[in-house]
Image 1 (tube, rainbow, N blue to C red):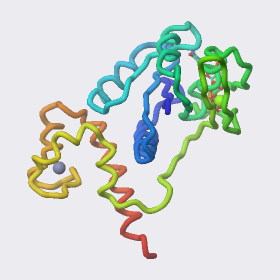
Image 2 (image 1 turned 180 degrees about the vertical axis):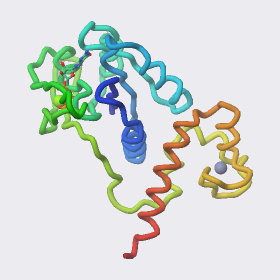
Image 3 (image 1 turned 60 degrees about the horizontal axis):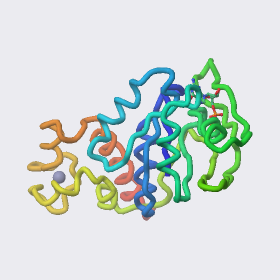
Image 4 (image 1 turned 180 degrees about the horizontal axis):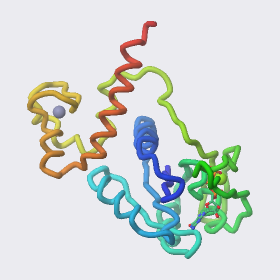
Length: 214
Ligand SMILES: Nc1nc2c(ncn2[C@@H]2O[C@H](COP(=O)(O)OP(=O)(O)OP(=O)(O)O)[C@@H](O)[C@H]2O)c(=O)[nH]1
Ligand SMILES: [Mg+2]
Ligand SMILES: [Zn+2]
């Protein structure tokens, strides 16, 4: 799964982390594509910082200037891939550049700085060396169904090596005393924003779990 993020529309990394978690629960490998790099390189740099220990490649690419296209192609070759991400980040534009297709693309609404949901269906496109699906963008995404809260931390690779040092087992790496993950955040080994988003998602999963019999 190639999760596409752009400087515009404004990135919502909670959506990114939710998608990443959902993919990993299904055994799907993920990469982050920081696109529209022609608008500036700050986003790719930010993502490289926040996802440094998240076990996913971060690629910087621009469909406008052509920067990074070959690296994306190399990553995709020999795999069946899917592009996902907020509406308007440039998924269809990127595929047009990579495959020479003529998928419909759409302007971003100036007023609300959001995509217009131009792509409305998922379509698998194949060339000699690429198999890739374009999908409809979104601005909202929910976990489907009830999940035991301990399942969430299992899809954060940055926690794996630390876990057995936590004082409590199982530890949710939230507010527990003696949590090795929180210590790693304090020590700068895990990015505080990535951990903060994990805690937000954990809160949500717990809430659904608590109300599972309602
Ligand atoms: N500057 C710049 N603009 C881009 C780039 N890629 C796409 N865009 C613009 O971003 C807008 C949205 O592009 P789309 O390809 O339609 O975005 P999408 O992700 O497919 O959107 P949905 O189909 O709605 O999910 C268009 O106006 C594109 O021209 C890029 O690399 N640089
Ligand atoms: Mg599209
Ligand atoms: Zn912990």
